[in-house]
Amino acid sequence: MECVRERKRPLTDGIGGLRVVKVLDAAQRSLKSGGKPVTVEPLPLEVA
Image: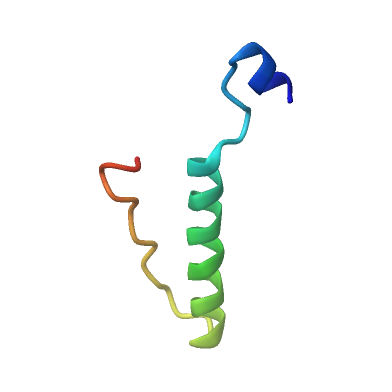
């Protein structure tokens, strides 16, 4: 709420959350493939 009241950027924003989800997705795909390396796709330029 402080961010809204004071118009401050939160410590963790939606973009940061999206990055975490992408890493977790890659980790899950790696586990399903027996631990093989997988690629973490970069964020689109309009989002990054």
